[in-house]
Image (cartoon, rainbow, N blue to C red; front, side, top):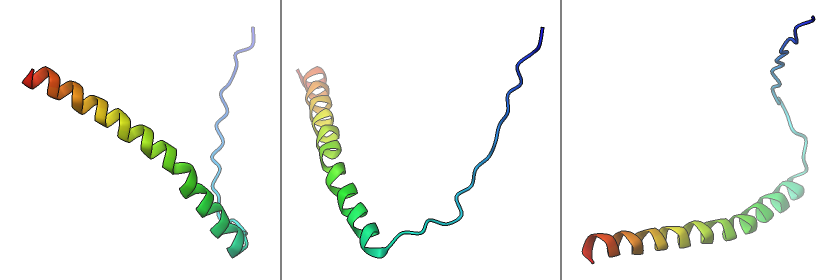
Length: 58
């Protein structure tokens, strides 16, 4: 019976060739995509704070 061997390869990215305009466009899209995530985290924090306040103060 042959045993399976685990092969691990390490990959290192050295350079990414990208036009400046494309990079700016990508970063603007990245910022707009992070807005909904920030809102979700904010609402989770608000709910957690309200529950904590309710449990501690009454």
